[in-house]
Image 1 (tube, rainbow, N blue to C red):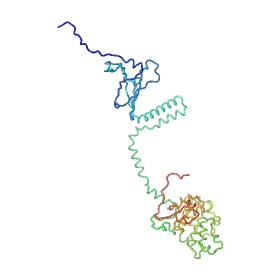
Image 2 (image 1 turned 120 degrees about the vertical axis):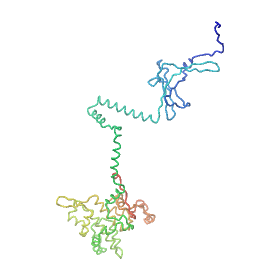
Image 3 (image 1 turned 30 degrees about the vertical axis):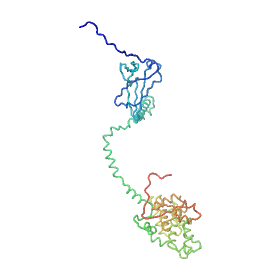
Image 4 (image 1 turned 180 degrees about the vertical axis):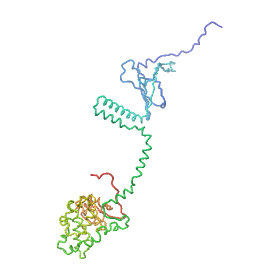
Length: 422
């Protein structure tokens, strides 16, 4: 064995150097990124940031890298609590083939965390709210008044533990189901509302409009025969309206004078108009004077007693007040009286009437009269082209005029929900 040392074969040498020039000129990178879990696509660009203040020598190598893929955000840093702990220093060797040199560059290791952007805001919101509440309660318990401390304790006592309700959730569902099954159906509610309407007796199954509100239900045969039509006819043209108890109805007065102007008097129409006049007069009696015979005589004149008795039965309530029985108007009984007037007027006008014909006579707003017509089952429609043409020059008035029309089958509006709009 030869004792001479083996000579190393000589060949081309590679120059090694440290990228000190890049460090001094501020060239960034590279960085070794560690992705726990899911890594972004290789084509994802990352941005590098420096802390605002880097005066201290120990802070000059602090860096933050960030990338955004649209749905996921990646953020990492080589300092602080989220920095990767280790005692090794990593460098990357970069070989330049043209100059045949290898350059070493520092490569700080950065642990990158991912955050789903759609959940980020929610988590921050809940966290900040809980932190604020805890801080507020701590301050209140330390420096608050006795009242504030009691409020804090009350809120803590009344806080609902959602997890504790899981065991009774089934019982609550069964209890709610049992209670809701006993609730009335939509059809039964509508039927009850129709029964409670302050309107004359009606036939819901009527196939002809005149059978909906039959005349003998509006005016009994006994009342009809006792209407004093002769006293009005005997007056002739000598102030026939003087026999009427209520003088303030334009609709009734004009209709009666029109009926008397023809040679053949329509006694049936005059009877119905006189009955409407009796109803209007009865409506003007003060509530406290319903049992005052002198007031009744003054307001109602010579109205037959049977008609007055039926008025009291239909349109007043009789609450017990000690040993003396008195009569009184209620909101429902007043509406019932108004609906009776409108139903007879519909009969007179062949169930197609000017909705504003009785507005002034009843001292009501048009919207209120329309509501009463609807409660009777009428539809409030605009004038037809023929009706507008009949008005002639009063075309502007036709825009505001409406017709209340009763048709078959009879339908009522659905009950309103909530309080009436003011």
